[in-house]
Image (cartoon, rainbow, N blue to C red):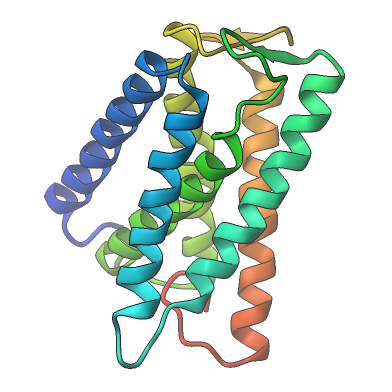
Length: 200
């Protein structure tokens, strides 16, 4: 049950708009691999400054760990997919554009921040409900962002059973990476008694 449906819907729609803007940005600049990478790195530095450097206490190290884990998992998955011919990036001279790991890192931050904003709006903030919310968001939002970039010619999937250019396997892979990171961060928070609203 959601305590404030209006605010919940507003947060969700705002996140969809951000994804569209990010997808259009990458689609328009897809030829300028290094430029996209530099802009995404600057955004990551900004996020780290706001969440870790600036606060005198309650520095959000979970955010940094999550971004690094997701960036690593993302690049492993991307390498596997491209090498095996499951998808292909267009316009760039490299098999995997330079900006890809940074996009994965920002995808983590995006989902984390959204979950952090939505969880207080749940009537029952149990771990079970947090996991259900994380699964729903990880299934819908990353794939939605991919639809925008696919239609702007950034890459193509060659797997079958596609919905708007995104195959069922891609939904499952995206969910797997995000939930694997979720589980790791949950255990880190539990082990070190870190009171994080999303993972503990």
